[in-house]
Image 1 (tube, rainbow, N blue to C red):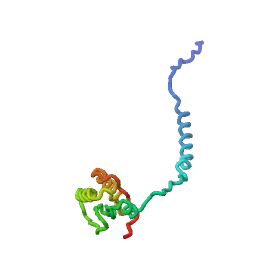
Image 2 (image 1 turned 90 degrees about the horizontal axis):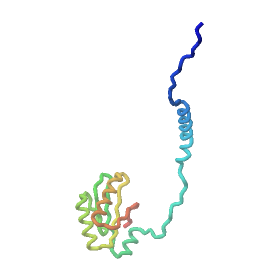
Image 3 (image 1 turned 135 degrees about the vertical axis):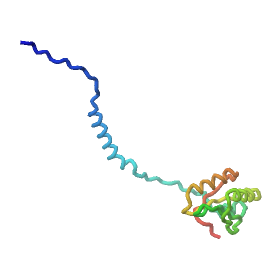
Image 4 (image 1 turned 180 degrees about the vertical axis):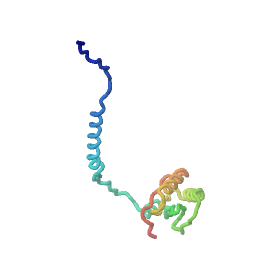
Length: 149
């Protein structure tokens, strides 16, 4: 009778990935459950200012008259008003910058205010602010309400 000889098994070095998948699924569930709690808002107390001034107060302080108002309408068209004159609409950016620089050479302390229609793309306001900055306008205010005249 022949002796029983066990088959020689070849050793394989494989990683068992099932436990790793289980751990990953548990972590995924934990992150999915805790994510809504992490993204909730936090109550903050915004700083209040005692020194904010209206455009009329700025104009009176600087003895420079009314501010220079640059408007961007809903179609992205530019408008300009100097010394409470009627708004000149449909200006090109270069023409607007030339007029603003000329007025600032006459009255360097005149405040410059930029206002935009609520429907205007934000990029149009930023492009206008950037162009004014490159033209040498040091300080520009953003209008949130129309001036009362």
